[in-house]
Image (cartoon, rainbow, N blue to C red; front, side):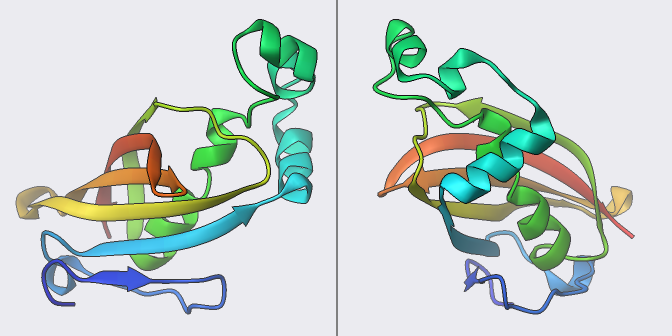
Length: 150
């Protein structure tokens, strides 16, 4: 992959097995995901987060939101796929991850995920990446992660 190249993937894109010599600073992967009510129900069943801000309009409005908000971890969960299948791919093991939730996400929403290599730490066989989730061109979540490449 050439530096500063963005690979656009979808759910049918085959996974990759990239090593440290196959990636460069600036390489990125991006995917758009339509997070709909069905996806929300499936995440909700798994997480068991029954907070009313996620379930009732009245409770959400009392907390200053227009309507119930999508759980933050539901919004960020797709990074598991981007990192573990595409960049760096199946040889990656997540070491650390941090998110900042800047704006709420409401369902349904077209979420655009992006992960970009910011630093390659060859002696540690790891990379640092920036993470972003956008809705309609506006950033809602930012983050960073570090992965070891095996």
